[in-house]
Length: 245
Length: 195
Image 1: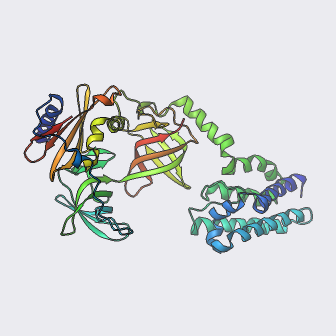
Image 2: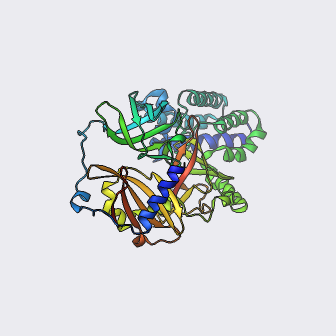
Image 3: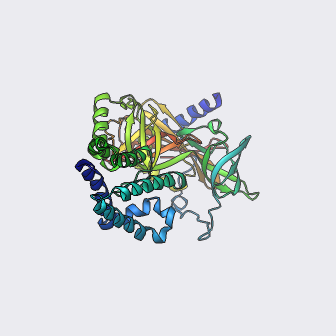
């Protein structure tokens, strides 16, 4: 094996084995990995640590033979396939506690690892490929790249309108005295809403003295002035105005 | 439709023209402790959750996620939420719902509030596209569509606005939205984010 292969494969396995064996977050990674389904919750953590020890042993054997590493890579692909089929929501848990479901990137990474054992050029490319294919490194390049794209293209610009969102009116209503007076009696969420000049009207259903009534609030539409909120309670059967505030 | 508009005109006048009320609010009733008639540990009889199997007139036949079957009656006084406050005609077979109301003697829930397809998701924004947020929620991907004119954003607990430009890829958000049945897609009602 060339030094490139030794450094790449050895580095990946040492990282991953060291993480499994010594990292503080290893039990967290183990719990979210497909191992939990494979060996059961009780045995997850010690099996996970053992796998880490095996990986470190394989690193030690690398200068002499590649066979243990080949077997380990094949077992890794088998583990990924098992996880993908039997525990699709679980993470790989391979070398970090980062949660992301097993997908094509994990398989590609395992493929690169296996190929690097036989082809020195793959090991050289592996330093870049391994970085790109590991979800735990996304925050160093993929997320900033996407943030940069959003800053350039403003994909959510058309969401901005001059209209006050209904939710904002409801928030203002809930801070008003009129609403606090009758809040206990309201039985429904917003039944209907419509705009009337500077006011936005909100209708709720209310139970008052064994009668079903509409509580209609007028809330300032373009200003945040909860003190100006007005209320009329109207009986639903005979349209009598029960009270106003 | 005309009756609904007439009703709006009448109710608007009742609030804004300062019509004379026949009574006044009785504080004893207004501040009475709400009646809480649920046995500890027992299911709340005045609440129903599930998917709509059939709609007959104003009656919804709902199968709960625990397999329990329920009938829900909707009236003109029922609030119906489906992305926004809307009308009963917008409710469709296959929709999921939460309903709160009063259980009648015959077992029917007379609904006071109906929330159709409502979801409450805590997630990370994994990327942002043209009027769409791609969310990652416990390892699963959710496509959240922005509905211009409806979608609102609350930053740091301040009043909701329609400007979404402060949302960041990689950021943590809470989204209230309407699920599009049998997909991993939602329409966004409100996004809560910190900046």
